[in-house]
Length: 111
Length: 116
Image 1 (cartoon, each protein chain N blue to C red):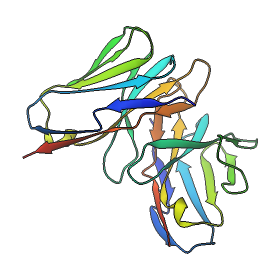
Image 2 (tube, rainbow over the protein chains, first blue to last red):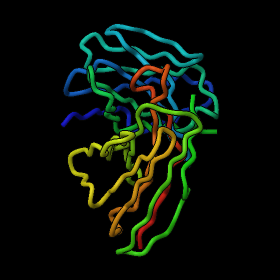
Image 3 (cartoon, one colour):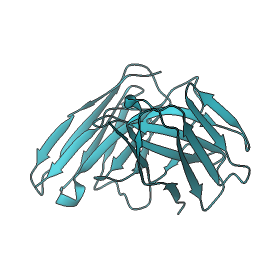
Image 4 (tube, chains in turn brown, yellow):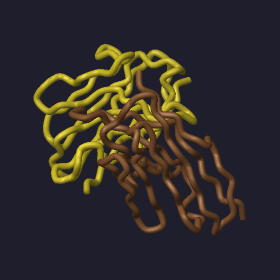
Protein backbone atom coordinates (compact mmCIF):
# COMPACT_ATOMS: atom_id res chain seq x y z
CA UNK A 1 0.00 0.00 0.00
CA UNK A 2 0.91 3.66 -0.10
CA UNK A 3 3.30 4.98 2.50
CA UNK A 4 4.00 8.53 3.47
CA UNK A 5 7.33 9.13 5.16
CA UNK A 6 7.84 12.28 7.13
CA UNK A 7 11.12 13.76 8.17
CA UNK A 8 12.40 14.55 10.58
CA UNK A 9 10.69 12.22 13.02
CA UNK A 10 11.20 14.73 15.80
CA UNK A 11 12.54 18.22 16.20
CA UNK A 12 13.83 20.11 19.21
CA UNK A 13 14.01 23.83 18.61
CA UNK A 14 14.12 27.09 20.51
CA UNK A 15 11.25 29.52 20.51
CA UNK A 16 11.54 31.93 17.61
CA UNK A 17 13.28 29.51 15.29
CA UNK A 18 11.89 28.55 11.90
CA UNK A 19 10.84 24.95 11.30
CA UNK A 20 10.83 22.89 8.14
CA UNK A 21 9.48 19.38 7.68
CA UNK A 22 8.63 17.31 4.66
CA UNK A 23 6.64 14.36 3.49
CA UNK A 24 7.43 11.98 0.65
CA UNK A 25 5.32 9.32 -0.99
CA UNK A 26 5.98 6.26 -3.09
CA UNK A 27 3.08 7.23 -5.32
CA UNK A 28 1.25 10.28 -6.62
CA UNK A 29 -1.44 12.10 -4.68
CA UNK A 30 -4.02 14.51 -5.97
CA UNK A 31 -4.35 16.44 -2.72
CA UNK A 32 -1.94 17.06 0.12
CA UNK A 33 -3.02 18.16 3.57
CA UNK A 34 -1.24 19.01 6.79
CA UNK A 35 -2.77 18.34 10.21
CA UNK A 36 -1.57 19.08 13.74
CA UNK A 37 -2.37 16.94 16.76
CA UNK A 38 -2.08 18.23 20.32
CA UNK A 39 -1.84 15.75 23.22
CA UNK A 40 -5.20 14.22 24.01
CA UNK A 41 -6.85 15.77 20.99
CA UNK A 42 -7.79 14.77 17.49
CA UNK A 43 -5.87 16.19 14.52
CA UNK A 44 -6.79 19.65 13.27
CA UNK A 45 -6.46 20.70 9.65
CA UNK A 46 -3.80 23.37 9.03
CA UNK A 47 -3.44 23.64 5.27
CA UNK A 48 -4.82 21.90 2.17
CA UNK A 49 -3.08 21.86 -1.24
CA UNK A 50 -4.80 20.95 -4.48
CA UNK A 51 -2.42 21.68 -7.35
CA UNK A 52 1.11 20.56 -8.10
CA UNK A 53 3.49 23.40 -7.35
CA UNK A 54 0.92 25.23 -5.21
CA UNK A 55 2.32 27.28 -2.35
CA UNK A 56 -0.18 28.17 0.37
CA UNK A 57 0.14 30.11 3.62
CA UNK A 58 -1.91 30.16 6.78
CA UNK A 59 -0.46 32.74 9.17
CA UNK A 60 3.05 31.64 10.06
CA UNK A 61 2.60 28.35 8.24
CA UNK A 62 3.53 27.80 4.60
CA UNK A 63 3.11 24.55 2.71
CA UNK A 64 3.91 23.47 -0.83
CA UNK A 65 2.59 20.72 -3.08
CA UNK A 66 5.60 19.20 -4.82
CA UNK A 67 5.86 19.35 -8.61
CA UNK A 68 6.18 15.58 -8.85
CA UNK A 69 3.00 15.20 -6.72
CA UNK A 70 4.93 12.79 -4.54
CA UNK A 71 6.00 15.22 -1.84
CA UNK A 72 5.04 18.22 0.23
CA UNK A 73 6.72 20.40 2.81
CA UNK A 74 5.55 22.52 5.71
CA UNK A 75 7.39 25.52 7.12
CA UNK A 76 6.62 27.28 10.37
CA UNK A 77 8.21 30.67 10.90
CA UNK A 78 9.10 32.21 14.25
CA UNK A 79 7.91 29.27 16.32
CA UNK A 80 5.94 29.87 19.52
CA UNK A 81 5.14 27.51 22.42
CA UNK A 82 1.69 26.60 21.09
CA UNK A 83 3.33 25.13 17.96
CA UNK A 84 4.33 22.12 20.05
CA UNK A 85 2.60 18.94 18.88
CA UNK A 86 2.70 16.29 16.21
CA UNK A 87 2.37 17.32 12.58
CA UNK A 88 0.95 14.84 10.09
CA UNK A 89 0.89 15.10 6.35
CA UNK A 90 -1.91 13.31 4.53
CA UNK A 91 -2.43 12.46 0.90
CA UNK A 92 -5.62 11.86 -1.00
CA UNK A 93 -6.06 10.08 -4.32
CA UNK A 94 -8.18 11.52 -7.08
CA UNK A 95 -11.81 10.44 -6.73
CA UNK A 96 -11.17 8.74 -3.40
CA UNK A 97 -12.28 10.24 -0.09
CA UNK A 98 -9.77 8.21 1.90
CA UNK A 99 -6.70 9.86 3.38
CA UNK A 100 -3.33 8.22 3.89
CA UNK A 101 -1.51 9.76 6.84
CA UNK A 102 2.21 10.21 7.19
CA UNK A 103 4.37 8.95 10.02
CA UNK A 104 4.33 12.28 11.84
CA UNK A 105 6.87 14.87 13.00
CA UNK A 106 6.93 15.66 16.70
CA UNK A 107 7.86 19.26 17.44
CA UNK A 108 9.24 20.20 20.85
CA UNK A 109 10.25 23.70 21.87
CA UNK A 110 13.14 23.93 24.28
CA UNK A 111 12.77 26.65 26.89
CA UNK B 1 -16.99 23.35 10.60
CA UNK B 2 -18.30 20.58 12.86
CA UNK B 3 -18.18 19.77 16.54
CA UNK B 4 -17.65 16.09 17.17
CA UNK B 5 -18.23 14.42 20.53
CA UNK B 6 -16.90 10.98 21.28
CA UNK B 7 -17.79 8.78 24.21
CA UNK B 8 -16.11 7.39 26.16
CA UNK B 9 -13.05 9.62 26.13
CA UNK B 10 -11.08 6.81 27.74
CA UNK B 11 -11.65 3.40 29.21
CA UNK B 12 -9.79 0.48 30.68
CA UNK B 13 -11.17 -2.85 29.49
CA UNK B 14 -10.64 -6.48 30.24
CA UNK B 15 -9.42 -8.92 27.64
CA UNK B 16 -12.26 -10.66 25.82
CA UNK B 17 -14.84 -7.94 26.39
CA UNK B 18 -16.32 -5.56 23.83
CA UNK B 19 -16.72 -1.80 23.94
CA UNK B 20 -18.84 0.51 21.84
CA UNK B 21 -17.61 4.01 21.05
CA UNK B 22 -20.12 6.67 20.12
CA UNK B 23 -19.58 9.60 17.77
CA UNK B 24 -22.08 12.47 17.70
CA UNK B 25 -21.79 15.37 15.27
CA UNK B 26 -23.57 18.70 15.67
CA UNK B 27 -24.53 18.88 12.00
CA UNK B 28 -25.44 16.54 9.18
CA UNK B 29 -22.35 15.22 7.48
CA UNK B 30 -21.74 13.33 4.30
CA UNK B 31 -18.91 10.98 5.14
CA UNK B 32 -17.88 9.59 8.51
CA UNK B 33 -14.64 7.72 9.09
CA UNK B 34 -13.18 5.69 11.93
CA UNK B 35 -9.42 5.75 12.49
CA UNK B 36 -7.13 3.89 14.86
CA UNK B 37 -3.99 5.46 16.29
CA UNK B 38 -1.77 2.99 18.09
CA UNK B 39 0.56 4.39 20.77
CA UNK B 40 3.08 6.76 19.22
CA UNK B 41 1.92 5.93 15.71
CA UNK B 42 0.12 7.55 12.84
CA UNK B 43 -3.55 7.25 11.95
CA UNK B 44 -4.85 4.19 10.14
CA UNK B 45 -8.29 4.14 8.55
CA UNK B 46 -10.50 1.34 9.85
CA UNK B 47 -13.62 1.96 7.81
CA UNK B 48 -15.86 4.48 6.13
CA UNK B 49 -19.33 4.65 7.68
CA UNK B 50 -22.06 5.30 5.16
CA UNK B 51 -25.56 6.25 6.26
CA UNK B 52 -28.09 3.68 5.19
CA UNK B 53 -25.59 1.09 4.04
CA UNK B 54 -22.90 -1.15 5.42
CA UNK B 55 -19.55 0.31 6.34
CA UNK B 56 -16.64 -0.12 3.95
CA UNK B 57 -13.64 -1.68 5.70
CA UNK B 58 -9.98 -1.24 4.90
CA UNK B 59 -7.59 -4.12 4.40
CA UNK B 60 -6.78 -5.72 7.72
CA UNK B 61 -10.04 -4.73 9.41
CA UNK B 62 -13.16 -6.89 9.44
CA UNK B 63 -16.76 -6.31 10.40
CA UNK B 64 -16.81 -9.09 13.00
CA UNK B 65 -14.04 -7.38 14.95
CA UNK B 66 -15.09 -3.76 14.36
CA UNK B 67 -18.85 -3.61 13.71
CA UNK B 68 -20.01 -0.12 12.81
CA UNK B 69 -23.44 1.44 12.79
CA UNK B 70 -24.56 4.67 11.22
CA UNK B 71 -28.28 5.06 11.83
CA UNK B 72 -28.49 8.71 10.72
CA UNK B 73 -26.47 11.62 9.34
CA UNK B 74 -25.16 12.81 12.72
CA UNK B 75 -24.30 9.64 14.65
CA UNK B 76 -22.15 6.54 14.37
CA UNK B 77 -20.81 3.84 16.65
CA UNK B 78 -17.73 1.64 16.46
CA UNK B 79 -17.54 -1.52 18.53
CA UNK B 80 -14.22 -3.13 19.34
CA UNK B 81 -15.10 -6.79 19.88
CA UNK B 82 -13.37 -9.50 21.87
CA UNK B 83 -10.60 -7.11 22.84
CA UNK B 84 -6.96 -8.05 23.35
CA UNK B 85 -4.05 -5.89 24.56
CA UNK B 86 -3.14 -5.27 20.91
CA UNK B 87 -6.37 -3.29 20.58
CA UNK B 88 -5.09 -0.68 23.03
CA UNK B 89 -5.23 2.45 20.91
CA UNK B 90 -6.89 5.78 20.39
CA UNK B 91 -9.96 5.44 18.19
CA UNK B 92 -10.90 8.59 16.31
CA UNK B 93 -14.11 9.53 14.58
CA UNK B 94 -13.79 12.00 11.73
CA UNK B 95 -16.24 13.61 9.34
CA UNK B 96 -16.35 15.33 6.03
CA UNK B 97 -18.64 18.36 6.10
CA UNK B 98 -20.73 19.60 3.21
CA UNK B 99 -19.26 22.76 1.77
CA UNK B 100 -15.71 21.74 2.59
CA UNK B 101 -13.45 19.97 0.12
CA UNK B 102 -12.95 16.23 0.37
CA UNK B 103 -10.02 15.37 2.61
CA UNK B 104 -10.63 18.37 4.86
CA UNK B 105 -11.67 16.27 7.81
CA UNK B 106 -12.81 17.26 11.28
CA UNK B 107 -11.84 14.90 14.09
CA UNK B 108 -13.26 14.08 17.47
CA UNK B 109 -10.99 14.11 20.50
CA UNK B 110 -10.61 10.37 20.35
CA UNK B 111 -11.40 7.47 22.65
CA UNK B 112 -8.34 6.07 24.38
CA UNK B 113 -8.76 2.37 25.12
CA UNK B 114 -6.44 0.35 27.31
CA UNK B 115 -6.97 -3.41 27.28
CA UNK B 116 -5.53 -5.39 30.18
